[in-house]
Length: 191
Image (cartoon, rainbow, N blue to C red; front, side, top):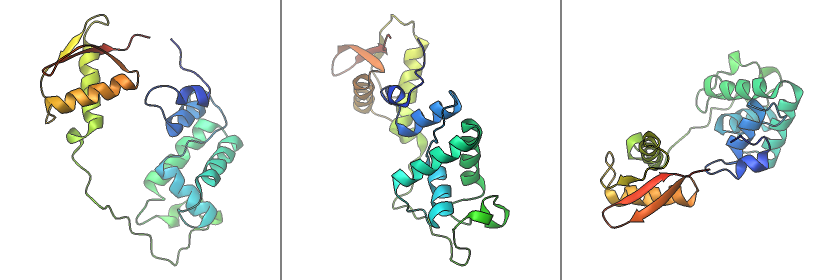
C-alpha cells in the first residue's frame, strides 16, 4: 500500500529498473541520487569527458554528485531537459548551453551522427503498447473478476496477447486463472 523509498526496494518492484528507481528516489523522496537516462548520460559524458562514452560508474557518480549539490528533483529535471532540448545527439546547441563554460565537448569537431540500424517500429506494434492495452482491460474490471483475453488486440495476434500476458504474470503484475489455446483468464495481481 506504499511506494518504497529505497532504491533497492524500488528495483524489486515489477517493471522498475535502475533509472526509474533512482528517478523516483530523487524526485519523489529527495534522495541525493541522480537518475541516468539517455539524455543525462549524453550531457554528463560531454561535460566530463568531452564524449558520450564515459563508463557507467563514472556517469552515476557524476549524477549523484550533481543531485547532492542542489535539490535532487530540480537537478534531475534540469539535466534531463538540457539533454532533450540543448545538448541534443545531433546539432547540439552549445552556444546557448549553461554548461558551456566548463564543458569538455569539443566545438571544433562535427557532432556525432546518430544512426539507427533499423527504423523504430510504429508504437502500436510494440510489446510496450500491448502490455498497456492488456493492463487497461484488466483495470476496467472489478478486482475479483477474471477477464478473458480471447482475441487479438490491435494488430497483435491472440498468441502474442497470450505471450505478453504470461510475461506480465511472471513479473507479478497479473494473475492468470484458466488457460486454454483460445483464452487466458487474467486479472491484476492482488497485493
